[in-house]
Length: 462
Image (cartoon, rainbow, N blue to C red; front, side):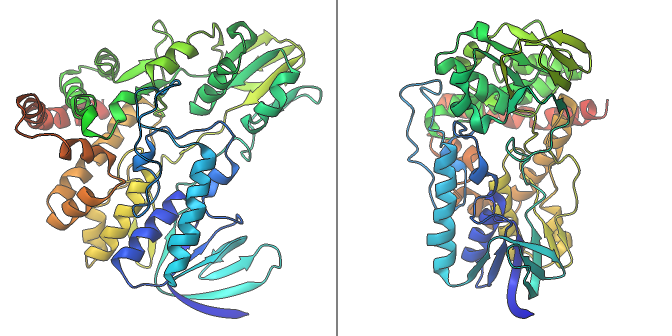
């Protein structure tokens, strides 16, 4: 058995593992070993469907040290007027570059692809079964807790008859022209992407059926723009969000106020959404999605037969020539949390809601800046992924608590301000603080912060 040494052993070379390693490389002189079952860095992006794009602007995704994209504004398409969204292939190539040109070139990073960590530093090479013992001098880092379930590899929870064609969206571009009817399964961002791909590539809305087990709330992408040019959308949106929380009398009332503030949107104004997984869309995308009228709201799929679709809420007829597109994989599905710093372990999780790479980078900064796990965990309360509006409120409580804790440490404040992954602070830094309209938004945020937080806690436990 071979034996090697390292300071940090990171299990998982996906987005979070790479973001953690990138910051650790800057902040320490530590040696780092990354282990991944895939043959390349980048995690699930290596298996992404061909038309996937980021939800958020490219300018604050990835690792801190290397830009993704050019911070340009899209001049055409459904994202027109907003910052560019990298394609899945662009993101995969970016992470390959991070590993090759940034991490490995440092001389302090070792990458063990096609390998799995068996525990206690034992790593098995998947092709040869060779075992290597890694002596870890400081910490094991579990970057697998944030691993996405993806359409290509997830385990289906429904049965498909042998003569029914049901594919992950990875093969939609190859198979679509062979069919005249399409049924999209799932209500998340992957399903929305698949519907939009069909429509943008010439399918008539009448050719599309969409199985929506639970309607989703969607975030207006205007709210997530990071530059000063969108200050009134981003910081103004934060102000309107706090006002909505502060004034809400119930969970439903809060969601309605978020919709009235143009921060959240829904597919059908007459159907109340039941889930909040944070798909982020533009108004132009929403208008296109609404062109599809054949929407089946009968719960999750149980069985697909040539002439019948059996769902939890009943059966409906089906066209035997239909191409089914399985978009039922849940992306960030972790709703349980664990202490992040625990003796010789670090369990990477979100510490800012919907921002896994920023979270991983900041966890690395916290790891290198404080002396004990108690102090570190006080600055890194895990933020679980949301499922409902109520769980969104629960996660926002942890999110807000972390934000306040960071603000009390000048070193962390300065690091966050210089970190390109902090998309939400950039707009505030790029505007003139003496502008009366800018001052009014800042002052209003300060005014409503405490009553909003108090009501958030009340609503979250209602």
